[in-house]
Image 1 (tube, one colour):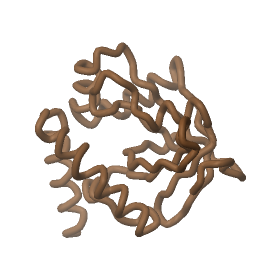
Image 2 (cartoon, one colour):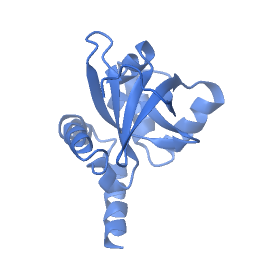
Image 3 (tube, one colour):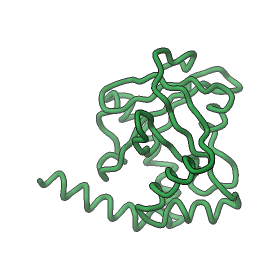
Image 4 (cartoon, one colour):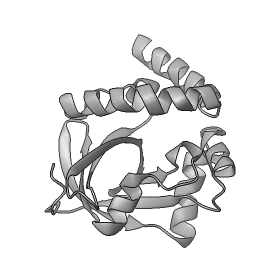
Length: 171
């Protein structure tokens, strides 16, 4: 009960602060590295973002230039038997590296709960893209604010489909 209340309060605070430029800087420079560390060390069981009650996963892609594994914590939406993620890059003009890595090599892994799940990324379009986008924007103004400040018309949205073999993600 206390944990649920703390999550609810953390979520409300995150929703309120997420569009603020200073908080975006805090998320990018402190929370993302902390989540990367926590999610990797606890096999997806604990994260800073997870304290808000939001679904958080650790996506490990293959660097398109280096061929090395690259891990990024992301909020996600269960989407059927897949994980849906939005490549917002906190409203920056450029697409996040992880999304470009997925376009080059769609095989990756997702660490969630206490499982490492091999996935194949699929770029969403049309109604499927719009459905996931509506889900993410339904929580508050942050994602729409990111889109508005990015100068882009849409963000890349991916479905991470579970596969039997994750290819060469390095995880």
